[in-house]
Amino acid sequence: LLVQRQMSVKEKDVEQFQQALRIYTDATNSQLNNLHVSVQNLPDRSCFIMYEFWQDRLSWMSYLQSSVSKTFQRCVLDSLEEPEMVSTMLLPASWWIMNNN
Image (cartoon, rainbow, N blue to C red; front, side):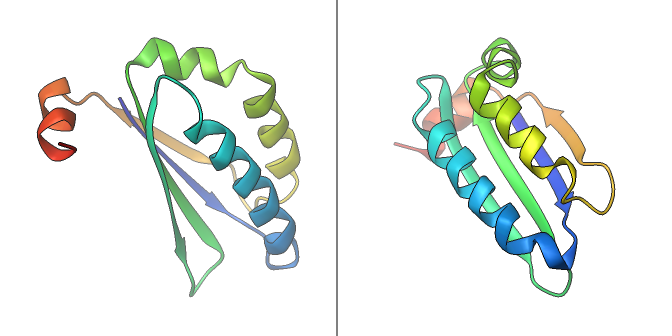
């Protein structure tokens, strides 16, 4: 499962957001069912796009209920200029195996 999360951050809150994001990505990377996390920053505007690759949808949904995920959501809620945009796409396991071996 590929999860794309786009977050537009208020200029004044970028540094605080980046600290929370770093903690979240480090914790997420250490999860057994997380395959990869990548963050892109669009510098012309304070927009961050995060890509999370999960073993399956159930793993991701379970992680959303974790204390790490809930803490991140609470930390960034007031930092966002607009609601976070989340999209998901299922990928065949063979794609991950072929591209990471």
